Amino acid sequence: MATSIPNPKFSSHSRSISLPSSSHPLIVTAEEHLQKLKSSEGASSTSHSLACQKLDGLKNLYECLDDVLQLPLSQQALSNERLGTWEEEVLDGSLRLLDICGALRDIYLQTKESVQELQSSLRRKRSGNLDNEVCSYMICKKNLNKMISKCCKELKKAEKNCNLAVVNKDCAVLNLIKEVQVVSLPVLESVLSFLSGSKAGSHPRGWFLVSKLLQQKRASQGGDSSTAAIEQIEIQLHLLNKNKSNKDVLEKLEGVDSSIEELAEVLEIVFRLLLKTRVSLLNIVNH
Image 1 (cartoon, rainbow, N blue to C red):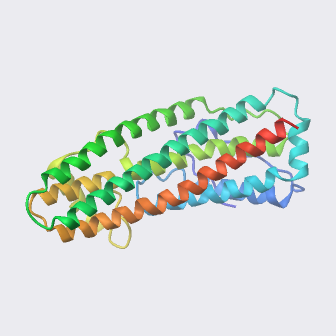
Image 2: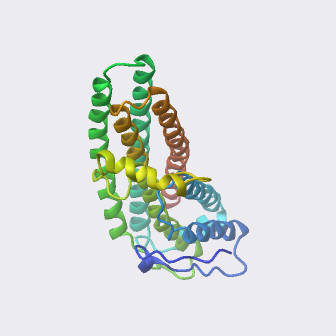
């Protein structure tokens, strides 16, 4: 089993489930997925590969959690818990995660649309003044920044309110659900960071961006750049204004678009799994 690497941001929440050796194999498998995600919390890079790795790990974790919730022993264990001791906290947590993941999914879809519209404009207009095309993208980006800023605030609020206090140390299923909710937050934050960088709305401008890209070029050989996707787009637009060829810019934009699309597809799957988990929890509460 992987060893957890403490993340200062979430260190106050770190706690082992300490499942008994007789736990159901599905619960043990879920804990293994959980520990793998915990071990990646210390990595704060905004690279595409790391964001994909974390999000795919979250997808696997929720697939396993849903299987756990379908077990009669899990449903019985949760039903035996005294009413009111866990429903509000766990259900509130599931709703928060669903809202944040939904907002993040919408941000990715809108970013993908704006990048593809920009690519289409550049293909149609091979030469000449491209100010109108760039201006259209920047208008879309302004709206994106508002969405990103709101999502960041919701993530911070969720992190602050997330409580990993153990309701019943003997209820492994309940403890598992709560730990899964806690570990989901830094994963979603890393996916947002790949798109927007560490601080939404505070991206560098002009040739400082170009310099940043050139400095990272050597380091990124053999792997993807740690420059956030929106920053990569702005770099290419700046180069376009400096008479960089449309063809070169289009090639770079296609790479960014491919990265965004890959994460958007997994985000959609995770969103549906979060919804499925919430429905399962509501069914247990109501029966």
